Image (cartoon, rainbow, N blue to C red):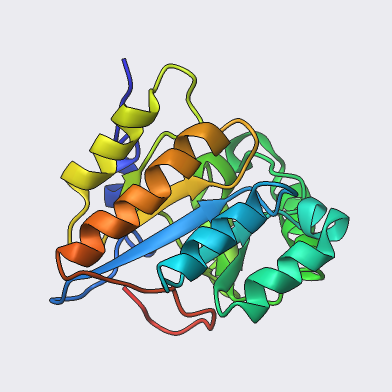
Length: 210
């Protein structure tokens, strides 16, 4: 069974993190984790360009180092980027000093004051420390596009039925998520644009955005 919102309790224990965007308007925030990935992220950029919608990409430093051209394309296309650590490590299972060092290495490749912990796993002390330098962005709706037991139709339906004004939605521009994500993304954009929603990117500076 898929738990669609496993971090609901974390929102209670981590009130200083960004879980959704405060807005009374019909605004949604599409985000992508784990890229950039050659052959996948460029397709995402094409879809976003087709629908004229901005998004926010939380990139791993290792992937940016591997494919700097794709990363530059994300920025030149007008999207926001955020730090997703260098090597996609889990904060809960990593020594604090090692975790901070990994984030610092990623920052050399990703010029942004946004940070999202991989898997959403971050210790309170880590959040407190990194919160001095970053706006830590979580999410309000996880598509589960990366799960092999989630069909592309279920992935799409989840986003269509659960997104609401201010939702931060997570997709992944990764190999294992690509089939579900590339199916759901254009349909999500088309559906909500027809409903009068606007898609926005998360500001990259460390201002108050929640």
